[in-house]
Length: 137
Image 1 (cartoon, rainbow, N blue to C red):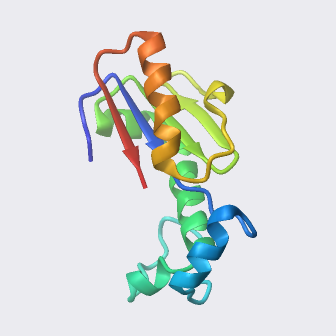
Image 2: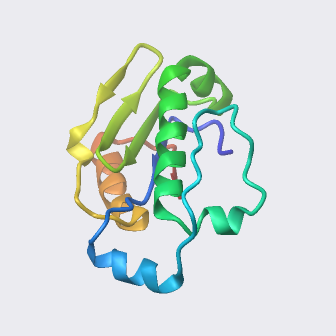
Image 3: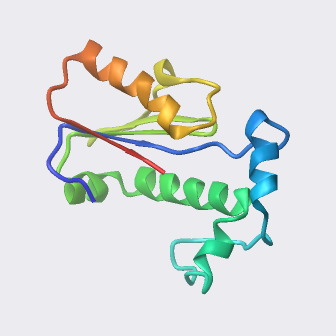
C-alpha cells in the first residue's frame, strides 16, 4: 500500500458488456459470477477463476471504493495522505478529511485504467501537486 503522498489516485478498469474490450475478454474466457456482499465476505478459493469474470471484478471495485468512502478518515490515516481520488465505472470521487465529493473533471469513457492515468497525470500537473502516487487495478 503506498503511503505518505499528498494525493493517491486509485483508478480501476471498467467492465462493460458489449464494449470494444468485451470481445477480447470473452476470448480469454469467463467464469461464474460470485457475489461478494461485504468486506467481511470470505476470499474465494480460486482467485484466478474469480478474476476471470468481469462482474466479479466490478463488484470488488465497487465494494473497495464504497469502503474507502465510508471510512475516509481511517483510510487517509492509513495511507498517510491528504486526499484520495477514486476513478472507476461511473465513479469520480475526491476523498478528503472533510468530505467525499464529485470529481467529474476526471470523467472519461475509457475502460482501461492505464489510459485514465493520463488524465490523472495532467490533473496533478495542473494542480501543482509535487508528491503524488497513482494506483491502477
